[in-house]
Image (cartoon, rainbow, N blue to C red; front, top):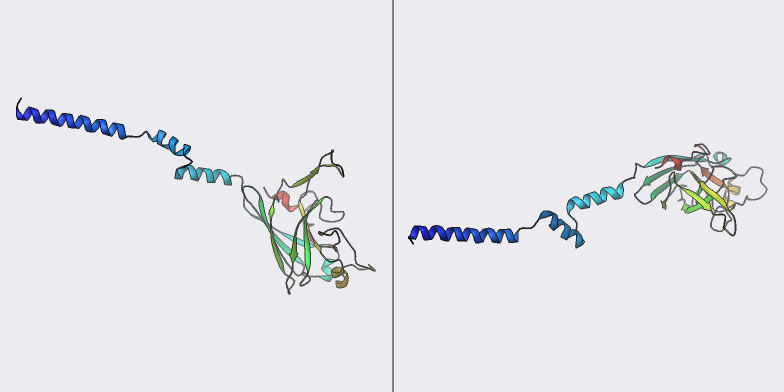
Length: 223
């Protein structure tokens, strides 16, 4: 065999071996992704898709005002509150910023069926404390949108009612003596007591959302 022929045969053999090694080491991209998924790992593209899916259904924040309840404008002429509800993927965040209230005073926030008496089904949310200037802020997390409702099935041992939406907000004085001393209860000979705090011994309502229709409160505008 000539040297030239031998060199050609040797080169072909090396090339064949190299191709076999490369073929054995190559990995099908689809199989590689499948292996990663089984190991609990995800590509950047897959992570992005998952985040997008989790946030699906969220919408922009909705801001609205709470206005003085009956007789409150006469004793607290600047009483008001601004509320912002920000929907998230699993629940909503509601922030209430109040001002013009009695200073250094406690209040109680409820989600309610209708804004004024008799208020209907009501759900205690949080306390709110004002500073020396009569301003206060609080943030709560829950379901505050067009799906907010309460229900008590017919099998309840106490009271029963069908699923009932609550689309309004109401803020009450925690101490019945505060509005009485401020003159917010004209004609009353003693403080008016309501059940709108944790001890069911609260004062009258100070702010509500009666600036919206009874059957279409602000929470009904949040998706």
